[in-house]
Every structure is written in C-alpha cells, then in structure tokens.
Image (tube, rainbow, N blue to C red):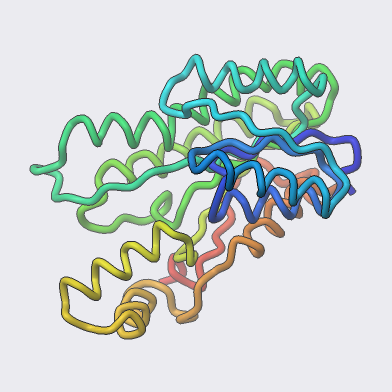
Length: 260
C-alpha cells in the first residue's frame, strides 16, 4: 500500500514509535528512524527492519528539542530520498510534579519535544507535500490531549496543544491531498510506562502485577494495554485511501479511557 512512500517517525528507536515504523515498513514505506539509544542497538534495529521488509531504512539522530535540528531532519530526508510523504510526530518525554513545584526547565523541555518539534517538522515538510498533492501527518498525542490528570501540567498542556495544532493543520490543508490527524493512546506498555509501574510498586510496597492492575483500573476500562503494533495499524489506516477524508481529528486508542 505504501510502496515508494517515505516516512519519518520521530522517537522511533523504541516503544510506540518503533511499532509504527515497523508497520509502515511492512506496507512498503522507506523509513527514517529517529531517537536516542545505544548506537549498536539502533543499527541492529535499522538493519532488521530493512532486511525483513525489503525497504530502505536510515537513522537520523536529530535532537527533537531543537527546532533547527527538527527542520534539518526534514531537509536531510528530502536530500536522501527526494521526498517526505508521511511524517509521524511521536517523540515525547514525561515528568510529573505538582504545578507549583514543577521545574521550569522540565516545563520547557516537555513543550519543546512534545509540541514544538511537531510544529517545526510540519512547517518544513508541508510545502513539498502540498506540491505533490499527497501527504500524511500523524501526531501521536495522548488521552492526555483530551483529558487531564494531576501532576502532569506540562505533558497535558503539550498534548492538548498538539491536538489543537492538528486541527489547524487539518483545516489549512483541507482539499489539498494532505491530511493531518492525531492519535490519542491511553496506556501502552512501553519502557516509559514500565518505569511508572515500577515506581508505583516501590512507593506502595506492592508487586509489579498489582501495580499494573491498579494503573489500568484507574483510567482504562478495558483493563488492557494498547500495543505499539495496534498504534502502528492506526497510523497505517490514516495513510490509506479509506482515510482520505479524515483530517483535523483526534482518534482515541484508549480502551475506553475518554468515554467516561
């Protein structure tokens, strides 16, 4: 379905981003991986995706906290592949604290990576998408782009902002062949969530399994995690012809979290 297309997935060396990159590669897209991690492990991932799916895969370690680096990622991809067809803005970080104790440096870092990086990437990629009359921009927001939780001021603000940015870009590109949508996952079993489970277990003196069950029960009625593969499938759907008229919207993949 995506043969000949070029996809950038930010924050794709692990977790949700890696799941999305693999799904797009499975459908024939050439992939630009991005993110931090051990160089050897990243190279193993890169080679594995290329070998398994017969697509071109490169890695670009652009720092998503720096706007010029984000724009440089787009430029480097166009120089290498001649185009960017699909841009998945997935890179994100988290920090929790009450708002009156929230470190300003953490506030700025979260907004830079979770929100501003998407702005810079979209702004740079959009002109050549519009010129060719086809493009897919998918912003990985969160259930926290639609509802709030305590101690997550920066994350909730950034993800709400990302949903708002999605709507604006959807309106500005309507009818151009380019769409822009957000996916809003609930709990996904990633290294980031594993750390939250471990922290909860340690703080409460309970087992990992009990902490997992409590985490899900508090927010996610299905009592099941969404998977990176499922989110990859959601992105793939938004890249399909069936989704040509879906734009400017937020799709929840949250086991019922935001239905309450």
